Length: 111
Length: 112
Image 1 (cartoon, rainbow over the protein chains, first blue to last red):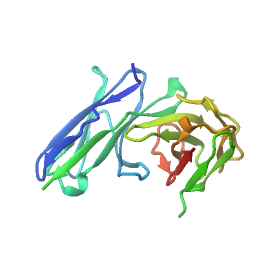
Image 2 (cartoon, rainbow over the protein chains, first blue to last red):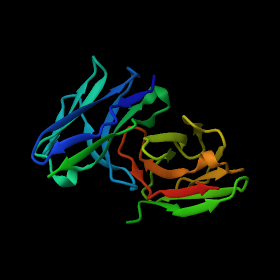
Image 3 (spheres, each protein chain N blue to C red):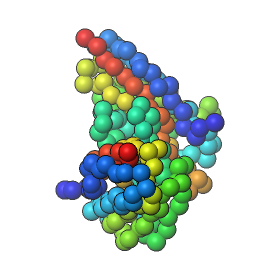
Image 4 (cartoon, rainbow over the protein chains, first blue to last red):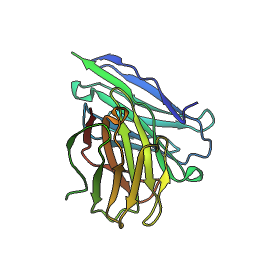
């Protein structure tokens, strides 16, 4: 089983709609969680960190469910510019304190 | 504000050739990473360095070596390139393992 797993998609989303997707992680000792965004052939960039209580940044909401070992990302009022691959990233101090990436979820927002 | 700088941006190698990918960061970060990304795939960790003077294997270390030359620089060496190493290579750094990572622009390597 991979340490961090994501549905690769693509999620085809009408402009203005809401889309949500999850990421599961296998190491119960994981401590830090992030969502990164990657545009085609570019470097990943931080979208948001994920906190235990859940957090929101504009149209983006991230949630953490430690009991079921997954994090989620919800995008409201999708824009064409939200089309990208969203990477789930997990850090576990017990696993060498390194960042482990999921395979990414591709989102395509269409007019 | 350079951030993380990788060189070269593009490279074509013949099978069996060697080369070193360079990475430098100017953010005084402790941890540095090398990932590879194959088409349509996520990032896979090759090697990482939690702090100056230490390096550890990641998920796919075979065929690669690394050097943490100093706090700023972390290089990745391919001793004998193989077509299976054709990929995009990203270097990243963060202050420590559980903080935001910043990436270089990537090196697109083709081995023929």
